[in-house]
Amino acid sequence: MNVDVGFQSEGTQPGIQAKAPTSNRALVVVAVGVVAVFLVVAIALGAAKFINKAPQAGSVLITALPATAQVKLNGQPIACTMPCRIDNLGVGKHLVEVSDEGYVSQSLPVEVSDGRVMPVDLVLKPAGPAMGEIKVTFPDDVSEMTVFLDGTLTTREALEAAFSVEQGEHLVEVLAPGFRPFRQFIDVRDGASTVAVDLQPLGFDVEIQGTTGSVVRVNGERRGTVPVRVTLDPFALNEIEVSLRSVGVSRWKGILALPEIAQSTIDLDFDRPATAYKTRDFGWLAATTGEDWWAVWVDDIDTGLVTPIDATKRLPLRKGSHVISFRRGYDRHDVEVDVRGGETLVMRENFDFVWKP
Image (cartoon, rainbow, N blue to C red):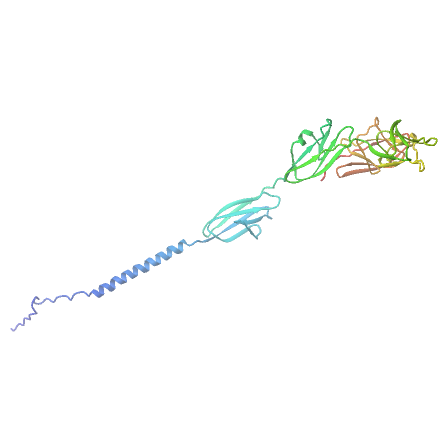
């Protein structure tokens, strides 16, 4: 039997073949592939993380009363009606302000979240009236005074200090014995509005004119020569005498009362003699108006008197038809009367006064 035994080159064993060495290039390719896969995964994860952190838009839904309220967002007016939804707001804090005329405005910080609608519910409170002040100064030489603000009895001390009132028109009234009623309308705005009470003595200042050199006497008392200014009492039948003794004696004598004494001048020139009224040409007026006082006007003349005018101190009026007007604030009540000589007309009215600006 023939056996062939093959011998390999030196350093080898018979029947065993040696493995070929692994290529370095293949290893590099594998490594690069691994790194590339890692980078792709890392980039993808990073992009996803970045996308997840991007700001998302949110919304607010505002409901408010009254429904006419206006909205501001971060100080900027927003045109919308209630309920008011504002979209596409960046996440974070925003300032919502709601306001309406006659109400107290409200502001509210709102935290807007990703993709959410944040509700804002507000109810505005009615605003209180705007306030101002009235400060009244009074004459130091008059101690007895009755003071009214908007028809309501108050005190001198209350108005001498700055008295808080709603802004708008107000009425200050002061009554004092022997003086005409003081009344002043005042428009109060921001700050203090001042009123200076100026009381004028009761009566009518009249200038009596006439023939040069004539002497004037009132109720028997010599007052000087014409022209002369005298004060006539509305409660009295004022007896006026004008005389001139240059050539012989010229004399005019008569009674003056309302409405004649309301004239600024009375001409008693002897060449144009005025009508000389006698006591019998006058009657008297007494008037009451219920709980509230009213200023008394006769034939559109302010007498300077207020009700009540009682029968113990009557107002003399020339006989005939007259319009008696009771006035206070912006209110007035006119009554036509007929005064008879030598008689007292008593008027009993019931007029309530409510101040209305």
